[in-house]
Image (cartoon, rainbow, N blue to C red):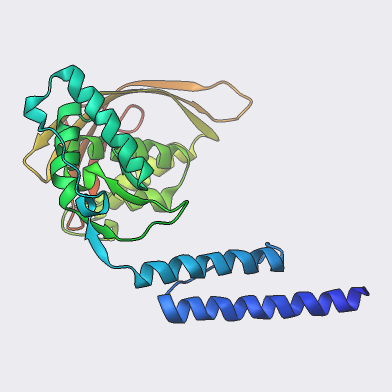
Length: 277
């Protein structure tokens, strides 16, 4: 086959693929980006599989998890010994996995609490009444029972990742006062600038140690966090580094979108550590 004929076939396949993408967007609201690196034939097969999945979900009815599993009966948590509960929890987890229902946790949940959630609350949740190989329906335990201390710690970890990685735009997205965004407060802007200036004074900063010492919840929407950190800054990547260590204090609040944000920070090398708030 001549190269010109191959090019014509490829162009024809690309045109068909673009039509398939438009059809997916029109029927299901599916917006696709990328894919231009895939060979035309491979992309066509992938688009066909995607359309099949979308069609099945669009046509599917909803049902409860219990009905989806065939309305099984489970022993009550209060009637099980620790050993028997462990066995039942393992059996139930395998049953859910086999049915394509995935339940994850972001932190350790006591076995009894998790078993009670699975056998009582999860069973009443609704899912798509559809079964397809390779497709799972997912639940996250913390969506039902948020762990605020975990979220606060995660925000503090993100702070150091963004600051030392010099991702300043991302840093500003987690540092603002309760009444508004970063630009609404000259004091907050000055604090962020000082943090960025500290990082920019080094070619590289390496976090050596991060240890959470205490989180104090102040009601449901405010928190204090204290961590002990150690990091080394290199003014020149090949030169001698300067080590900073000690406590770092954070004052945080939960915003109107249920995200935790930092409104005050004191850390070695930038602000003298002390009680935040």
